[in-house]
Image (cartoon, rainbow, N blue to C red; front, side, top):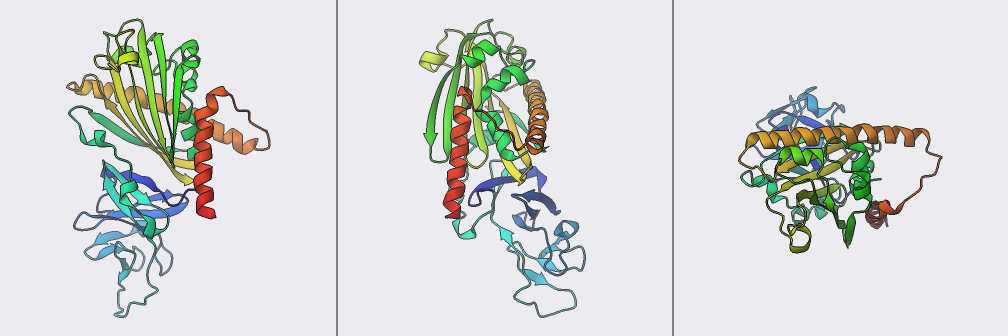
Length: 343
């Protein structure tokens, strides 16, 4: 089941043009398009005439034209034209979805249209600040339930095992991190500190002046259903990052993770990485993106294998451990929100 009354990321801004763009979200076939004035719309990917997918059509002056028999639908799903027929039946319409373009994302509301409140959309101003936070973004198709990817981000102890050669750290410092968690209405925030540790390879490569011992932080905010905002970095040990909040002069990155369910066993992973240390050097942003992309491909491999195992061995129990505390609260939040909608 999915949380319906929520905003999901449907696409990156650049993905949708004046050409039908299809994507399945919460197991619903969607087609997005820009009209002639460049406004974005989203409707179900189905013509109400013979059920043909509208992704095979094209954008015309009055809306989206079906590529099978030429019916045209406006952005709100109303049939605007039927070739060879003047009368348009009232039932000649399809479902439409509220969409909002914000911070380089296209957000879609999958639930009750009357509850689609734009003020509930996450603010992420860093996507609009290329000077201080130059960034690149991507979307991956993951053959796993979106919640498994969220699980992955709620337990950072996996970094020491999955990402040894990039953003990981040694196992001792990973498991002894100081961690504080704050619960919120739509999820939680947590911060992890690893003090006096060796910087991971990605950090040292990005900022060669980092010492052999750094104070490292990982700040995460989970916002249901599937969004995680991350700020991670490190400065030389004992220079005030932990006790005085002095975090300038070292390594720093911001990450946005947006997990949008496609089906019960697949999802879309929208992510961006922003460079907060050598902002005037485009090669630094490219290098960071490549490093993070490599790490996320490692996540993709293991989580997809996890999904396959869970499908095959679904009758075998799983055991929670201490490091699962944030993940468990995240899961309870989602269950609570789904239950609230179904009451």
